[in-house]
Image 1 (cartoon, rainbow over the protein chains, first blue to last red):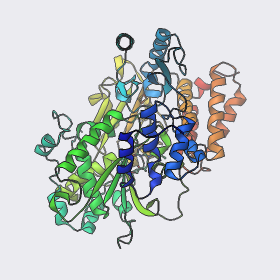
Image 2 (image 1 turned 180 degrees about the horizontal axis):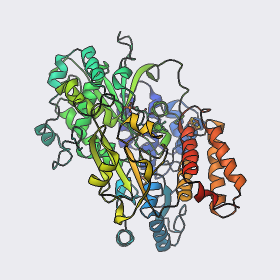
Image 3 (image 1 turned 180 degrees about the vertical axis):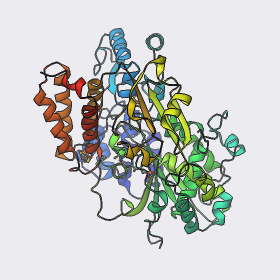
Image 4 (image 1 turned 90 degrees about the vertical axis):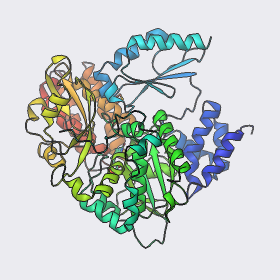
Length: 161
Length: 414
Ligand SMILES: Cc1cc2nc3c(=O)[nH]c(=O)nc-3n(C[C@H](O)[C@H](O)[C@H](O)COP(=O)(O)O)c2cc1C
Ligand code: SF4
Ligand code: FES
């Protein structure tokens, strides 16, 4: 097995061990660390984690697959998450989604061929008062308009070229 | 109408930074706190009548009293920052503008229940807010406000921030604890008698961010001061949210007992673009919808909303104008619940997915009267037969929307 926590994550792991009554609680924090390190959570990394936490790989898979933010397959470099729940729907999230789909020429749930962008439809992001809300990787875009989307996508394209 | 207790510092520039927070009263309740015994602190909170702000309105003092006081086992405070009920975005205001208020509340509450370690479970999407809160926690450690000896007193307190990873159901308190134990977020069966939550084998309390943030005022100013606001059964204030078709969306702290329509029209600025109000969901998507003509006389407190056939919930109101199609709203909500069911109980797992499919068929113009009857009968299947109240919420949606906007639904079917 070749996957290992990098130094920073290993140190974090050792620190976290002291902050919970049982090692079991480290499951979610460790899955986050793996995802940050690798971009997604592969079967190999789950085996690694299982050994570290004294669990079976199936236990780890069972937990990882329960939570929508853990990627069990690779996603685009920029994961564009469009909130589709009620308050955002009332404020035009459907139009925002269509606009992004048109610009990237893919549908929600798909990634661009170069794996630069993924569009994901998500449920309420807790930003209903500034709807419609879109979240690109970790960053919230609020009161989103098609113009804002254009500016951001243009920027991201320019950057990574 | 507006009464700022929890939101007092929201408009102050840089109020999230320790220095500014302290200049504006943060941590000033601790002197009083440490002059009290833990039992006395519990008693004050109990007498204040503080009710949980996470949606249920359970009395906080009574909950704390379930924790055994003999000190045999460690106890834990677990703060619920999962905030994912559609229409709800209030706790994040506290995390963004006054994280030190939450930490101060955690110190007061942990001291009261004799806990030396508190966990804050924050929804995974709140990355910005988790960073802001972690920075505040680090500042507090650095300043000796957290750690081995809180401000030099004989009291040790650690605070650990724990990130969720995208699952609405983890806001339910027992699912949250399961998740904190590193498992899938499956709600637990409710015990026969009232019990603490059990984090592994340790008695614990789960409270919402806003509940905990209300505690410093009560400790510092006393329970009478808190009771001076609100109503007899609903003392104090709550953060109410406005979203959807409203002119001024946002979060506003109001005294309990405020007239709902007055709030919507005066502070909310009425329905967006001068349109007419059609319906409103009072406290997050899991409560019964109210028609515009049902709002007359409603005041914002648990009893009034119950008397009017809905509930106060999280106080996150979703406003819908005259152009909104109710069948589409129901489909939108079904998709949410379909996606978020934890899948443990058959009636919920199957019933919610079936409801979603039926509604899709009806909106596609393929539905029959019988499909609507089936949908209405699914409400019976979903209500009262499951581990948690997630499934009953879906039953409320079926009953209240189809019941109140019958024609809109029946006109779609053959
Ligand atoms: C399906 C479901 C979702 C919930 N989501 C949340 C939530 O996101 N945040 C929250 O504080 N409480 C939520 N609750 C309520 C909690 O179970 C619990 O009652 C609350 O955190 C207790 O704190 P309080 O008494 O301070 O309100 C939810 C309950 C249910 C049934
Ligand atoms: S009612 Fe639904 S969400 Fe609640 S425990 Fe059962 S399956 Fe899970
Ligand atoms: S409905 Fe989109 S953020 Fe709440």
